[in-house]
Length: 328
Image (cartoon, rainbow, N blue to C red; front, top):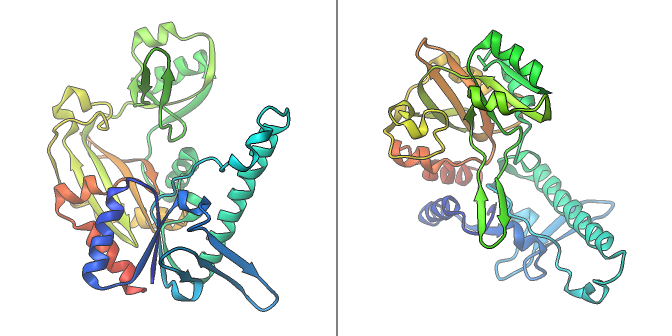
């Protein structure tokens, strides 16, 4: 049986399930929020002779029946506090909620550890997000070209870096989902990559919160690469043909996207990087510059792949289902 751990409203998961049905492979899907629902939640047991678990629900699944796991994503939510609603006015109520949240977190991690010891897993439970700078350092040490990077709180340091490396961009240090502000109406602010213009530099105070700055690359193409168990599926994004997407192609526009064959040495370095990060799947971003550099930017272990699969006809949903079926 294939176990799929995903989240609500995740259409790429639905597509893989369609292929599993077509291939006749048994599966059980459980969303991250289901792990907190008594009707679906797993039960774990560790005794002297063995460790075991089973999932509850209409389709029960024991550890011995699970042969492959796809950790797609893991939507979570705060613990159910209805049982302690009478304590809401108590001063210690936030501490109890925090305690229950931590208990849920540890139970979930225990489940993941148990699955990892017994089954073939696509994805990495412990690395649904990664430290951008850690990955950048690892990539640089392996021989990948990376952008000149500065993390600082100092305007003076920033100016000196700009004097050496020329025009700069800035982006979030972490995978920020953005900021939601609720006033008269709800406003969502998304964090994109932005250029440091002279006006922005002038407006900066002498000291600010930690920020990430990188050299502004002279792009020819943006490249999105989906990695699946040693193979690279690359797509070229003609982002420079549209003013809206020149700095950050995620400001999506109707750009041309085509399949792209990466040089063999770049593919080899990607495999080395993903192995070093203990990832067997993920989406990587590169830039090909006009001078011919292939510059690695970052990797998202649970990043989108449909945006690569559909324009390039890679049928990645089918390939993921086949990978899972091979171990089912």
